Structure formats: C-alpha cells, structure tokens
Length: 352
Ligand code: NAD
Ligand code: DAU
Image (cartoon, rainbow, N blue to C red; front, side):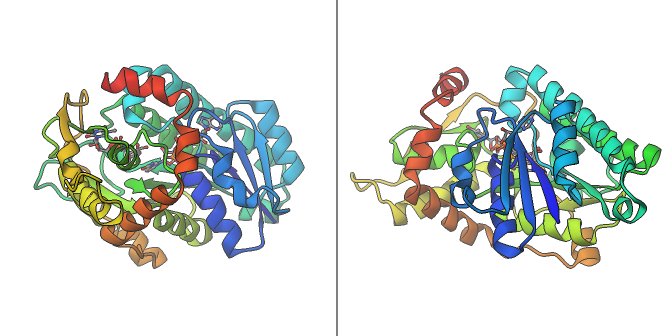
C-alpha cells in the first residue's frame, strides 16, 4: 500500500511524512516542486528508507503526475502543495493562482482520470485529502463565534482567495464526478522545519541574531495556534475515518494576540538562550507597518472533528512553543542553509 503526499518537502508536509513513516509500514511517495519553501534536508532522516520515494514535479504537470499515479498505484493522495505565505501573496499573487488554483485543478483532473480507471473495490477505498486553511472564512470580530464548517467563505487575501478557490474545486469534483474527497481547514501551525518567513520561526531567528522582532500594526491581531504534529495527527484521523465529501476544521483552541505570542516566545528564549548583555529579548520587539487587509481575528470551532473522529491536540501552546524553540536552537545548520539563498532578498524587500 502506498500514499502520495504533495508538498512533502515543505513545513507541514515534511512533518507529516516523518510522522507517517515513524508510525506505520505503508510507503510514501513525496511529489514536490521544491520551490523556495521546499527543502529535502527536512527529510534527511528518511532519505535511505526504502518506504520513502521523492519525485520532483509540479502538481500542475499532468503527464508527470499521471505517470507517478500509474507507477505507484496509491490508495490515497494528500495535497499539501501550495504557495502558503500571505505576505508573498500580496507581493506576487500570480504564483498563488498558478499553484493553488490551476495546480490544484490539474491535480484533481489527473487524479480523477486515474481513479476512474481503478477496479470497483480500489475506487471505493481511494481518498483525495486536500489540506486547506481557516483563512478561507475571513476575519472575525472580537465577540463573534469561532469558524464552523458551515461558515460562509469570505477570503480577504490573495492567498486565502486562492485556497478558497481550490476548496471549491475539490468540492465540485466530489459532487460532479464522485471523486472521494476530504478537506481540512486548519489554523496557524508552528513547530520544527517551518520556513523562517512566518511569525514564530522568523522571530526565533531574528532574536538570537540580534535583529528586530517585527510586529505588524498594533500586534493585537488574534490567531489560533496548533503544534504541527497535532495537525498531522488530525490529518491521519480524517484520512482513516473521515466521511467522504465532508470538511473538517482543525485548531488548537488557543487564541492569542501576536504580541502575546512574542512575549511568551521571548520569555522561553530568555530561559533557554539568555542574551549575553543580561537584557530580555522583548527589548527587540519593534512595531512596523501593518499588513494590507490584515485579518483581525481567526478562531476555530473544532467540535466536529473532536466528536466525530475523537481527535484532540496533545500539546499546549506553552509546551509546543518550548519544543519549537529547542528545535531551532539545536538545528541552526538547517536554518543557516535555508536563509542563505532567496530568503535574504525576501527579507530585504518585506522589512527594508
Ligand atoms: P510550505 O510553504 O512550507 O510548503 C509548501 C510545499 O509545497 C513546499 O515544499 C513547496 O516546494 C511545495 N510546492 C509549492 N508549489 C508546488 C507545486 N506547484 N507543485 C508541487 N509542489 C509545490 O507550506 P506549509 O506551511 O507546509 O503548508 C502546507 C499546506 O497546509 C498548504 O496547502 C497550506 O495552505 C496549508 N496550511 C498551512 C498552515 C500553516 O500554518 N502553515 C495552516 C493551515 C493550512
Ligand atoms: O491561519 C492559517 C494560516 O496561517 C495558513 O493558512 C498560512 O499558510 C500560514 O502562513 C499562516 O498565515 P498567517 O498570515 O496567519 O501567518 P504568519 O506567520 O505570516 O503571521 C501570523 C501573524 O503574525 C499575522 O497576524 C501576521 C503577523 N506577523 C507576521 C509576520 C511574518 C507580524 O506581526 N510580523 C511578521 O513579521
């Protein structure tokens, strides 16, 4: 038995592949284009594992994906591949339309043709699991109820709009062709192997390198945070027990303002890697111009996945953040390799 993972060289995908291979015997084929966000080093510990295969390809490349499906005959495909950074989607939205919308559409179409050629028993077992985001639901007022699966889609950034479009295509392939799809909409992840353009790894990297910790606007925007391995366990639950055609919200029930996140991060860093001048890392917090169209608050109602699939996160934000800081302190070579290339150009453009 084999599953195909797309985008498995990225942050969540690599954690998922490592998690998968540590928990069961089934083979994984990782299809990844290796954009700036893809890094094979994140999977170094499984490079020689005979259950693991890496294929460099674009999800939108119909002949490459079709050949891969024919060769490996997977029982499921889990689609992590995407352009994922909101600020980059504001800077250059075309890449997001190309991969997240057109790429997902082509991946669905290629998968549909493969799936339709399967014998009845394998057709019934097959799953296309699409990994999406809570950002498709838009922004909440302070007193509004958390996002439920039935909320209207109201995407506000080019990234969110592209993910919303991909979710709609996934839904349409179920209703029109009967492709057995599942969709998950998760909140903000953090943990090992996250590219240091996102708030938490960016600020760990900046803190220990004596740089400013940039807070957009007033820092009172609220996000719901989930440790990445808890997201991976939720995806496993959905793959194994999710009802075809359904969507599942995933989150940590951990709403925090960005400023609260950074204060806790600084406190953990003060303990684990104190500054040589005796001052606290919070001194490096710096308010910078806000993100255009910055969503004020996300919150996720996870009662459906908890009740239907018996899933719950294991980490608290404090325990997950501590593990994350420890990982980045112990893996500075991984970080140094990641920030040595295109990263410098992005940081210069974004933060001046
Ligand atoms: P990431 O940017 O770290 O990784 C994306 C991966 O996809 C990279 O390895 C990249 O090389 C690959 N990729 C990009 N375009 C591709 C293409 N056209 N063909 C094949 N591979 C391609 O992203 P992430 O943070 O790991 O997010 C993974 C998925 O989870 C995305 O779909 C994202 O929308 C979703 N998600 C992310 C979060 C989060 O907090 N990071 C939360 C909820 C949902
Ligand atoms: O909600 C799920 C989404 O979470 C995922 O779908 C996205 O792929 C993922 O990137 C993440 O999006 P965010 O925009 O919320 O994540 P980011 O880490 O970029 O920002 C988190 C918050 O911190 C957000 O309110 C913007 C703010 N921020 C971010 C950066 C990079 C800052 O204040 N300063 C910064 O330098």
